[in-house]
Amino acid sequence: MNRHQVQNGRYTAAIDGQFVVFIIGMRFNKLWKIHKWIGAFVAMPRMLRELQRSPDKGMLGARMSWGGRTITVIQYWRGFDDLEAFAKNPSDPHLPAWRAFNRRVGKSGDVGVYHETYRVGSGQHESVYVNMPVMGLAEATTSVPVGKRRDTARERMVR
Image (cartoon, rainbow, N blue to C red; front, top):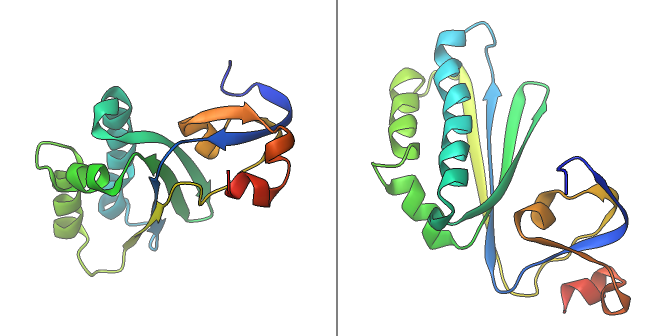
């Protein structure tokens, strides 16, 4: 299926076991200081390409969005250990990029970064996509039609 093709009807994401949602973003506090934020700006797509080429690293999928001065990436991971291993491995692109960011930006306030990490237990999530392309958790895992046993948010949450 084409990434932008609409799935008519109601769908949900199916995943067995726990997973991790990792939200990471960057804010351009001083737009005119391109030399401060360009490194971080190009580092994230590079990391995402590396992770997509290496599914054994544990990232299930990601989606980037831009609003105002902030870029946000929502990532879905198989587990926290995979995420942490990628973040700390000097052979992977994250650690060198993080060190470069700290050298270039430090506490100047020119560029902001943030992240949030959520461990989601088995059966502790629900989603619904109505007349939407496959996206979000369904894109990172499996998109399945909403059936009788998954008709309400509560039923999807406790399946």
